[in-house]
Length: 240
Image (cartoon, rainbow, N blue to C red; front, top):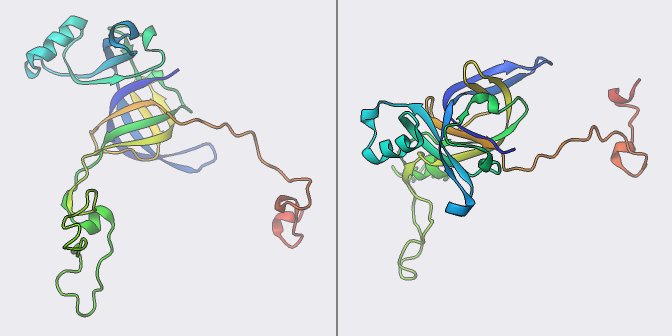
C-alpha cells in the first residue's frame, strides 16, 4: 500500500546497528497530518488526497484558505500537499496520518527544497574547470570564457551552463530505507541525507522504485570456467 506524509527535517545524526556498524541517518518530524480533501475518479478524473500539516493561527490564512479548511471541518493548517495514492479511495476527510503509517524497513522517496547558495559562478554551480593559476591567466581564472562563435548563430544556445541562482530547487532522493520509527515523538529516521536545511519542509512517500529482494549469497559455482569456482590455495580465504 502506498503511503505519504508531510514533515520537517530535524537534522542528521548517526546510529549503530546490531553488528556495530555506524549508519548515517536523517531525523524527520513527520505529521500528524489531516486529510483535508479527497479527489475521486468520478468527480475529478483521478484519485488523490490532500494532506494538511502544522497548525497555524487563523489570522494568517487568507479567506479562500480558511473557507477550504472550514468546509473540511479541519483546524487551520500551514501546509497543504496533494498525493496520488493507490488506496486514496479508502481514506476520508478528517482522517489523521501519523508517523506510525511507516515501519522500519520501508523504502521511501523524500522530497524537499535544496539549500540556497545565492548567485554562484560556473565553477561552483556547474563544476567548470578553472584556468591555470601560474602565468598569463590574469584575474579571470574562474570566469566562464567564450560561449561560442559570433556570426553564426549569433546567440547563446538555450541550456548553456552559466552563472546564476544556485539551489532552492525541488529535489527528490529516492529509495531511502526507514531505520527507525517513533510514534510518540512523531519521528521517522531514514538512512542517508535528504535535501533542504534544518527545519525545511519535506514530504515522504512510498518509493516509486521496484525493490528487488535478494535471494541469498551467490555461493560457489560448480562450473570450473567461472571465476567463482576457481579457488586460489595461496589466498588466506581459501585456507580452512
